[in-house]
Image (tube, one colour):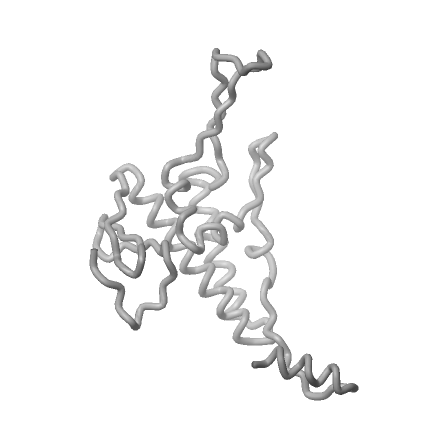
Length: 178
């Protein structure tokens, strides 16, 4: 593998595609090859694009108190990317449920739940769970809807404390800002 550069601000497990169809994952500070079958490259690219858009949206929300048109546009782009993903691949939370003819000790059939390989691999990315939270899946009906992040603001910057009423509060504020 190749050592991650000091200027790269990626967390352990970050997945990227430095070249077309070649993926890497950050392991112990080194970029290691990540095998993605050709049949899963397009889906993996879409997941990575949604990850980058979701992270950028949260960063933009954290940078301002105001709900700006730019925030609305970023949220709309992310929602559009998610809708396109669902149209092409189905919900990210989709599972294949298989009931075996083998029985448990209690005489119940063995049921297995299999997730798509692209999703299973993507869950290892530090922001994989963030992307999976873009949707809410009703497993009973198999229907999916946009999660809260695609509908409304999630992050509000902390407002600085400009005054307190007691010494105890002053100590607490001082410790919190260190």
